[in-house]
Amino acid sequence: MVSSRERKVASKPDTREEILRTASRLLQLNGFNGFSYGHIAKELGVKSAAVHYHFPSKAALGVALVDRFRTRYRLWMEDAAGLPAADQLSGYVAIHRRFLERGARVCPGGVLQAELYAVPEEVQASVTQMAQEVHDWLVEVLTAGRASGELTFEGPPEAMATVVGATVQGALQMARILGAEQFDLAEAQLWRFLGVSRELTKS
Amino acid sequence: MVSSRERKVASKPDTREEILRTASRLLQLNGFNGFSYGHIAKELGVKSAAVHYHFPSKAALGVALVDRFRTRYRLWMEDAAGLPAADQLSGYVAIHRRFLERGARVCPGGVLQAELYAVPEEVQASVTQMAQEVHDWLVEVLTAGRASGELTFEGPPEAMATVVGATVQGALQMARILGAEQFDLAEAQLWRFLGVSRELTKS
DNA sequence: TCGACAACTTACTAACTAATAAGTAATCTC
DNA sequence: GAGATTACTTATTAGTTAGTAAGTTGTCGA
Image (tube, rainbow over all chains, first blue to last red; front, top):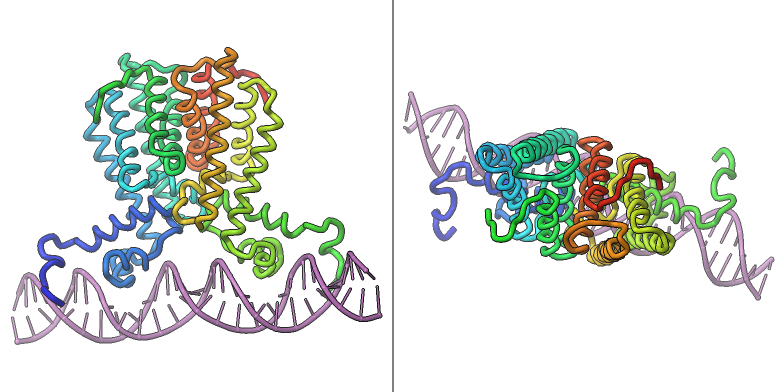
């Protein structure tokens, strides 16, 4: 009422993006069944029907949410494609570590996997695809990294990929309870198993 | 209406136990916010008020649920206390592997950690205690196992405990999507990191 | 300046949610 | 066999949920 500025001025697809940002945070904090259209609307100062305007059903919102993460992962992977295996893996861990820093969030794929059978089928399908893509990427990086001599670990890359993925995902969830330092401990241990010494590296 | 038999005949504390069993399954399948009093009641053929009779609030039910798992863990740990470290760890993994076999359930602690901020505070407190207890136990077993020469791994037992716990918890969640064999692959990889050869062992 | 469209709000619904109160029937106790 | 207790059911509530329909307002192109 005071001024007509301050709302949509420059960028057009403002609300839609803010909905996705807010919903992502709520998903990572409370799970898919732990937030509602009302929660999103309240935070953004709009009515819940406005959220329905952009995402007609919660299934649609869920799919958009997961696909947004999927796209980001994919873009990041393409970007990191040329780097040494250790740097790629370091970046992968850093992405998740950042979730922790930005308010004790967990991995979006992880939380949706945990409540997999309680989310709409369309969301399940998107989660499945994302999980498969990330897993395949891990196998690829680990295989190439060992072939080039950068990484030295025993056992099949497939198994190592599951351990790395599960450790990151599980440690994020545990870090909420046992403390963020547990995540760092787990990461350090992973580097040991990968045969990479990581003292003063940053990514 | 047909016959007055067929209901409570022999054992007395029947319903309360059945509620806990059903609620456990629903928790491990759908998460804490993925089931209701109505769901439990429907499965047991009673009214939801009957569930409220035994567990007045969902927070109370949640605490009872977690504490039941906590007690079982504790009893099992006491039971396994004398065994070799590798056998204790093998049993720990087997408990979780059994969740997978009994209908793709995940670790109850894991699913509650994932939606931690969306469950009642009393439940959070119980989950925290359980997670801490299991973690402490893992640290203990790993420390003793390495001291006795049974296990040979690098790095602090604290870090190894987080990796083992997170891998088991995370791999259970992933196994729903990537397949149960991923859990076995992850386990095999863990044994490699622990310096234990596990070809034809069973527990 | 007209009308079409985008981005909402207001107003509503039906279903589900946890929770409570009051009643009932069987059983156990003295 | 009277009274209390246990284990429920019936009935109801207030709040929340996803979802819809019908309006309102601003902007933009012709």
